[in-house]
Image (tube, rainbow, N blue to C red):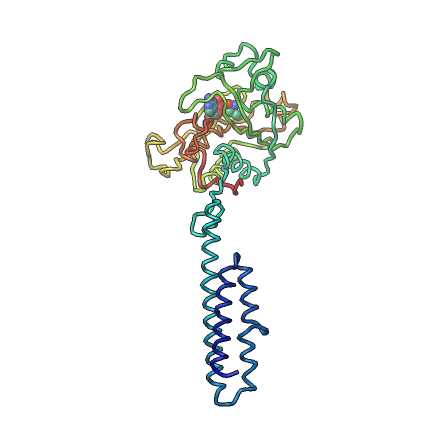
Length: 353
Ligand code: FA5
């Protein structure tokens, strides 16, 4: 074969490769044609194999021709590959299945713990560190535990302090978590450290700070020698952990038939650090929860001897605490589906989907 015949056969091979590439319908098909044309038994390799038998002065020219043809065929396949990719992507797009890596990913919806639940967990956690165990009681409660065992006999004027939902069967929807005090004393005896978080119900006219369904957490500590100092210490440590800052607490006199003496406990305003702001009505103090030393009659109802044991109890309004902590101005938002009030970055949990 002379040089011009070799050139003709290489041109023919390139032409043939062009036709085969144009006929390929997929990139896989194209790849297999390319490896056949440019492979060991293809026309270009065939010309290379001839080189050994050619006179020395022709080898350079033939090698150059073969290389040029190989590059031309490679370029031809590369162009066809691009063409096919675009055509396939366009087809996918037409079917709506294109993958566009520049588009934002799917939105992963995240759930958030309800503000009251979040505060409840924090209160439980803080009190658990001080040895308090969480218990629960029924939401539909007997008159005995809701009132009588708490030193509020029938016809006692203190029954009017809490507007009560009465159930046909003689029970009430518990107006507070305090019935859990006597239930816990009966069950566990003294010494005792319990908390009882839960839902309470009152026949209230709704406004920004009153709901007919709200949450409290009851706290009760009974032991030998328990005093008001223990009450103050426990409340202060618990509130500091919940609000994550140094706080002061103070007691004012308060009346509840089941404690003696009874108090209203205030804490220094967590928003202004006690300096005075609109939330604390410029007083520097915020009312947090009623509390007191357990009345001897209540200890007796619980089967505990008041001559041997004393105790303190408190009834923290969890719903109002959540409002204070998360700056929620209207209590009704907590039972609404308003995600602006209910979702807070601090309470986000993992993706739901
Ligand atoms: C009581 O319920 C007493 N059982 C608390 C107690 C326990 C005193 C142990 C002494 C010893 P009071 O009615 O004040 O107390 O309610 C306690 C807290 O529940 C209030 O400070 C308030 O935060 C919350 N609360 C009461 N009524 C409502 C309401 N309608 N909506 C939202 N929160 C309320």
